[in-house]
Image 1 (cartoon, helix red, strand yellow):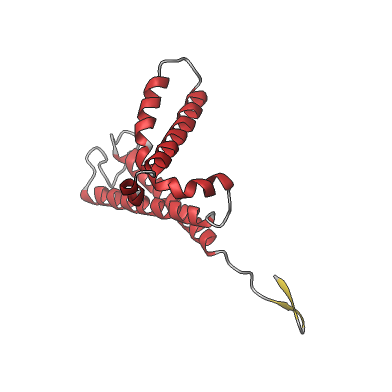
Image 2: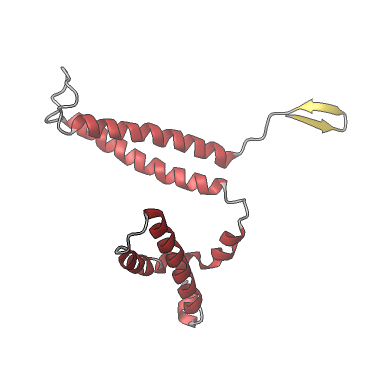
Length: 162
């Protein structure tokens, strides 16, 4: 990157965006570990999908189970870090709806399950397309849990918790 200084033009290294670098790293790690978990699962269960001279895959040895367990645990940990890095990357951006929702986010998280279950139950019978059902349940759950959070904030004891 070229930067103009008092003495003229000088070359400097590009500034790195650390959360973006972290998210790329964790996404790559997650993809690699995901494929290792899939490979261990696909080739390890049943054993008919792959014939191996080294391993009897109908009853995999201890090292196979150990490698699968470690791959799965590392995949779960890397996905957790990937999600955190992804949201840290976009934490500086300003989306008005999310900014307005931020003070009520914990209350929405605590209360969303009740309207979610009931709306899914009520919406299961109509013969609507899946996307329409999703939109109705999503909008209804968000609006009901947000309204309930705002209403519960009027109670002083509850307001200190949510």
